[in-house]
Length: 332
Ligand code: TYM
Image (cartoon, rainbow, N blue to C red; front, side, top):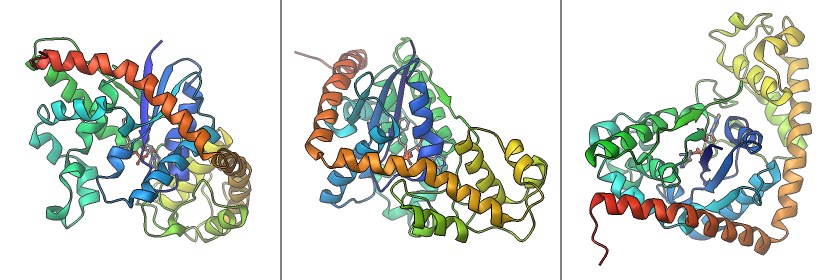
């Protein structure tokens, strides 16, 4: 059975993008993989987080993952900072990755923006920590949204260089799993920008805890163009907002763009948006309710994370200890 690792930052409430691009696929992969699901708080502090908010958001993220169907008994759910191996291996990888590789990372450029000089060093080496997350478990498959693809290529480059420099075949190649018709969910206000939990505008996204009225309103207000929906997929070219909403519908309904256009093509956005809002409410409301149920017992969620951390450490510690031996650290 192949081992899977994936992570999500507790830097806000998870969005529909996180759900369709990642979490929903994670749930589906649990049947035939050994899975590690990680709330990546070390990554979150690459931009400042209020300490109390970070603690709360880490617990809330775990509750949402459980509510979505992450199985913490058969698999492992834990917070990244509670397994030391991640930070230990990340340091080694900081010494493997080349500045030239990191300079090509588009996400750093997006996140650092114009004020690059003021970005944290952690934000710059962020992909090295991601590589450590995965390789600390010798995981071979990594389900993510489209925006993480470049980081996973870097994780493969790091593994290859480590193996080459130390003359070993220690870290395996990883395969990104980018699945479904909504691997890149875009902002509801601007079809050229990714939907993100850290976007300043709440209208740009659907949060997994939005209530029915909020979802309906956000979809009604979602940016579109004046043309009716096209009858064929080719007609979505150059219509980023229409493509985005059709992709969201397709993912939620378990179908594809063509089938959605088969039903709604040729009609205006009015009836389509109504159907989309109803579908969203139908799929998301039970998740929000279940997450609230988990959060009614915060100590219970913390206990799940604690148990996950000790099982995760049992896998990662010997792998990272071996990496340290290969590097030449003396263990007197
Ligand atoms: P994060 O927290 O930004 O997002 C978590 C997952 O959600 C996906 N995602 C999206 N998918 C489709 N459309 C969107 N608009 C959208 N926004 C987010 C992301 O691709 C991701 O799969 N660096 C990672 C977390 C991480 C990680 C790892 C992932 C840390 N270590 C190791 C895999 C393996 C991140 O910031 O995800």
